[in-house]
Length: 305
Image (cartoon, rainbow, N blue to C red):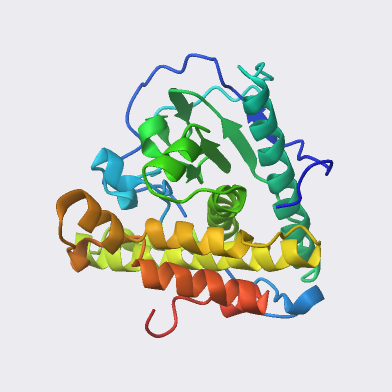
């Protein structure tokens, strides 16, 4: 990805090096928490239409912790400290990674600002929090094992950048565009939150069985993958893509599919427990967003997925 020298987002809250005591898990079956679109804009991107939805979860690596991500981010956990900070990165490599994140986030802001403006709406930009070890959020406390996630309670994306090492080394998904895909996916959950998808699910969740909630969660996660693909299309229009970038993202989507992860960790897959989608589904919906560049093509709630 050709990102160097580009403008960075001002919505980066760098808390690396701070201590963040765990005052309660962000995971829990309790209700109260929360987790896109249709239309036309530049490059065929659609507007923000009415959506039905699903809940908030949003760490990519749920199997690492053994926690069900559909139980995450209910908004009932301990509150966070919200003051922005600027911690000095530990190395030149970490400083470069911080800059990379800033550029990717800025590019997502540019895309979604354009999409919302086409519907005469303002885009409320999320804050991306970088942390190490532990962090407190409006959705409760979390640590690096949670993986990247979006908290609808404070409209922030949280990521311990060591996750990128795990993505490369443990899950076999190297490359800067694999890393960009992760961020674009989490920003996709922000879009779902502010357009009503996540609040709608939360209102329905109490009457769902765990298996029904899992199936609905798959649709939410696949939509976020599709939105990540829409952003990849935008990145191509901005001449940011390099050879192999899309393949990196597709490989990442493949490696973190429910079936692939479950087979890797326990030797077999249990479809009724899937809550992010299979490898084939995640690749398909990312490709759909990338090919069309249209959020309106990301309606995972209509028909089969």
